[in-house]
Image 1 (tube, rainbow, N blue to C red):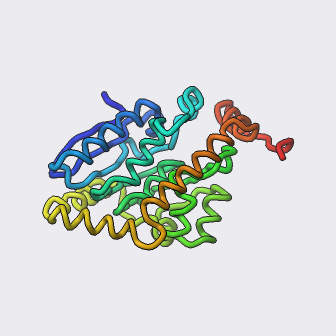
Image 2 (cartoon, rainbow, N blue to C red):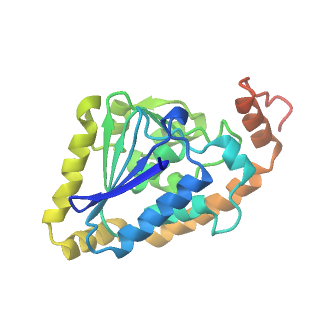
Length: 258
């Protein structure tokens, strides 16, 4: 079975991460499949909205580190970077249903969604500093905009897990729901867009995303800045130690890294 399930139902294109044995950790192949789904969403007039979810009790544990280290992103055509640009550029409503672990890109992608619903058991983690890296997906721009500088700094600099209610209070999540009703509620919300005039929905989303100096160009510019720093850090000693320690199931030792 595909590790990314794609289905058009009720005017909503469902993009569902389906690798439950790895908590839906994302591989190169999964990014490529998701990118194809986003391209379909952009071009197919039958698609009125997109819903992102995961199976097996997790949204996504972020990048699969073994897969990521085997093929690190290089150049703007890297599938993970294309995925982030699809998130930022989609002009149709994007809805997320986040349950369980939402790690790294599992949290940053939510900042590009129009509606975000979380289960009571959701755990959000932005572990970039712990991995010797920096934020991605324009989260260094978007999270301060959503939550305020101090709360964003706490989440991005310390990288400590936070729960669904904290995410709701800081504005990252619209509503917190019981696990058993999360997906159904998110689908119901996404299907509402099928009954609304598509041109008005798209125009309103463009206006929401494009007001002031925080519009699409600012987001893409910040993504490129983050990507340059991210790729430089990826080859540095701190990232090598962090990822090696993770794979070896030990605590990293940064004591000799200045």
